[in-house]
Image (cartoon, rainbow, N blue to C red; front, side, top):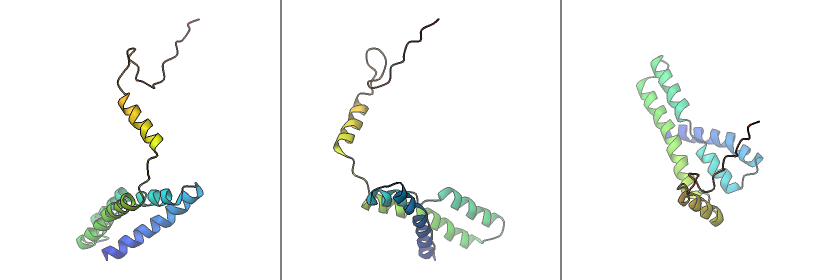
Length: 124
């Protein structure tokens, strides 16, 4: 039951997200990565399962199955996305990120390197 519900949940999320990645012209690999990471529904899933339990719509066993599926629907797609579709960081971008991180110390004028300097305001 858990596997069937998990498959249905992931499939419906893919149907909802994948076309949008194509509409926004993501590359196929980036679209798959985004789709898998957007396949979670932890907050709504756990709240709705708890609502059903508290109001007598489902019993404890059904609640356990639903919460297991909700948690698995966050973990499984994330593992797949990280394992198979993680985007490669381009070398110039990686160097820029690393350079910005190392240059984060304030300069002699107290403004971080690369930060916008305030423009003096002229009083009338």
